Length: 80
Image (tube, rainbow, N blue to C red; front, side, top):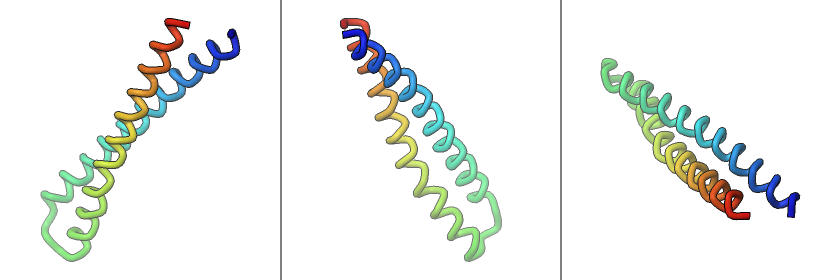
């Protein structure tokens, strides 16, 4: 039983840290996207804007899923 308690605790902590990293990457992508919107329009800027915009959604989703897993495993750890 102690094995599962430790496993749940490690999953909760590691998913929490990974969620922070994923949200940080999404924030950085959003900052780059907003900065490129202010730049003079060219083909290169348009391409980079599209790339940064496409990165915001998946990183945000990963961060939310990892946050949920962290909270879920922490709640399970409390009940075990």
